Image (cartoon, rainbow over all chains, first blue to last red; front, side, top):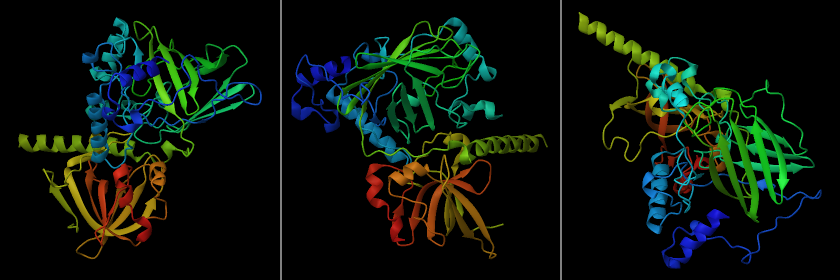
Length: 328
Length: 139
């Protein structure tokens, strides 16, 4: 794999003692030139089943200063790990994930950054909510007039695709893969998603059918499962990806078990209604057999939404009162 | 109505080392970081609900009445992974709470720390360094 090669090259160039933390050390690999062959299911498919939580600290985008370099130095690795520890210490809710040498999830474009928006998409997104931009966690601080000012995650609906697959959730980062003859099943703990993907080459559902998580179809190419997902709803977002998208969204995912405890996930996202070109992320998942996925019925008591709306009204009332007082 | 809780002006050191937590909603939009509350009361129940658990604490007022505050905590899944269960914080437990009050003016707060009367701290979240500090079964 590209990432493994880069990590290996970086590690070889440095004294072993200087490599910290231990979690970032290279993984055991098969002999040179011998790609790992995963076990097979009883019906002969490569077996990718297991728990693959996103306990990984890799930001979506890379700093501009990195250019095309996607491997951290020892110093940068230590800094990223220290920043994560500090972040966790500041809040009691979030979970700690060890840093890795991969500088950004985005591996294409080569600078590790989102490609430019099309002029139409830039204009459309900029004009949303009266010029405040798309709904987001930060955006709701600027305006909380209605539920429409909250993003899909804040409303407990979904993190979307590929949002549901991204590592580094504040909590509930579990992912599970299950397989049965003719199907590939992916569960995401955040937010309570299950995708059941047929592998029999059947066509996608009709173009009039549109969903938040889209319609996925899978097939094997060697030991890699390719999943193509289309039929997304128009005007939805995906977590950690800023713009609101169009129904031209198409996502191609590649799942490859590259070691007994390692699953390499690549996803290419294209939406010609939003970006000027496709972009690709790479996530190096690690097996965690002890992880348990629990139900996350997010909407059960989403008091936060109500509190934020009530808080905004209380703030307005106070401002109006103060203004009235000044006028006397 | 004068209550036996205090609202302090937020300032350096008031909640040493504690800054607003992150969640799947916006802290800044929901809670007022300038309204630091310190409460002393008794747990009445724990709402073991998603996306975040809420601890209800009865705080006695000078006139003998009591006010029920709701303190927001981590997601139940995260609490469970740290060995914290629904029964870890039983009704009747005496606690000291520090947090930030909701902007709505309701008796709700984001809990930054909960301390038991013996001085032990109960953390509601998931920093690995805090794991050893969780003493719920001992209360």
